[in-house]
Length: 312
Length: 326
Image 1 (tube, rainbow over the protein chains, first blue to last red):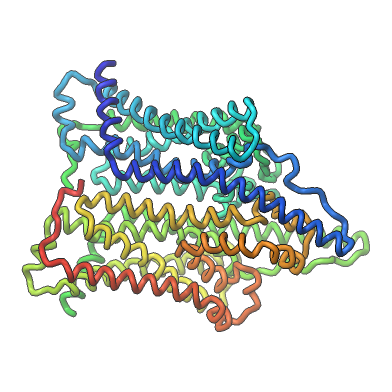
Image 2 (image 1 turned 90 degrees about the horizontal axis):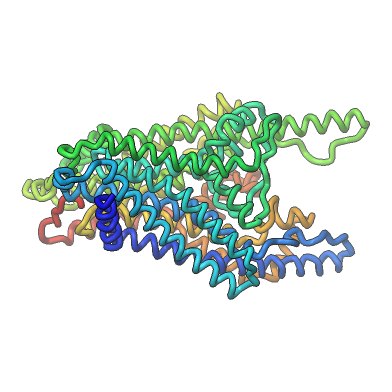
């Protein structure tokens, strides 16, 4: 176990020296701060737009519908964070995993490392510890930024604080999967480019392609924090795809769970026949992370220390 | 010029041998067909819903209030354009990176420069080789789109629609080449070449995903599921009248979106393909006139990128910083 701690300590020190990691971290924290402001500004504007609409309808003598956003949660200010975790957070996690997996291979030190008294499992354990430490620290910092900025712009109760903490906790589980993915490919691929690009392609498939297949959502519509009502019921083909693939659409499952945590309005996909239970996401996301961890275990098992060096 | 063509041929052959790019091309083919399949199924659902409603109204002895859904086949390509915005840019980044990294890693660039080949010819050769590959990929997307629309969507394109598709593919070529030149420049400039790839991905994240997302999120109509104005039962003129009070806010929102070249590409493509409904009935020449700023910006940035690559390469007096790609 001590060997794992040594590896973890070394990884944490190394990642803090990586400029790309720092750049992505700054973007993520910056967008966390911006997301509260964007949420507040949008909420403020939509109220003014509603008032202007009411005034126009009154002048024209038309009936006035109730405000469609009445009863919105205080935490709706953070609705953009759901998207930023899916976009920036996932790429940050891939980068963390990739950098932790590729560094020793680039420095051509894998042979030296395994000539010491350390097993592959201890080596991986150290990397996993460091990964959780790095991602946990980032999300903790984001949680603090979200809480403080929300407190400044809205009234936050103790329950809201618990919800913010739960949101970031669940985000850690989701992001850990991408970090394991980055680590797995960084440990096994022959070139560093392939090791970085394959997890990014998988991320694109999870974030954009699967939601389109399962819920008929256009790729760019997946970036809208206000979930759209989609209807696949009249199409037998889309219904069949939805039934088969929906549990695997991890980014959608993550969004559903976090929308529930933050009390954001959610529009379920209209389907015929089988309707998946609301708790599916609570199970699907951890299973995804565990599956990616198992991939990392296979990757470290396949790693041949004497041939792991990258000659680029 | 012969030297440039020789380099271009070598580039093209190298790309064809790359497994990574093969994976991306296959991925693009799969998502093109997937996207057309989903869009056509959604359209067919709308038609069947309309027909059911029509039958119900007939049974009740009433006439339908709204027009029947009309198929504009190019509208089904919305998902394809979204994917070119995202994956096409990734393809450009990878090609720009690989074309320089292979020379730096194998330390061959200085060797080439010892031969009677000018720096400009090297840039032209690399741009031609990679450009040819991007053009071929987009041609593949075009063929897949045409066949997808015909087989999956059941819609054959007429001559004008084919011309529109061709124009959008040309615009897509310029868009992808912008990311190619950006990474080409970064890879030439940066001492540690793998940082060039990471930084290009960070720029891609900001330009392709974050800026358009921020602009979209700030749209008042996007604040409510199903659309705010829809939920208030407002007509288009009423909506315009209300939003006239929020000109400053809309200007700011629009400015954020306009900082992204992806948004310019998207606006022009959506207009040409009629994905933006108001352009469906507009002649192509008028669409181009109305979208000339967006089109000019995409082609302008493409030309500026190529010019910058040429300038940077020709100004470097000494050899290239050779590192191990770490």
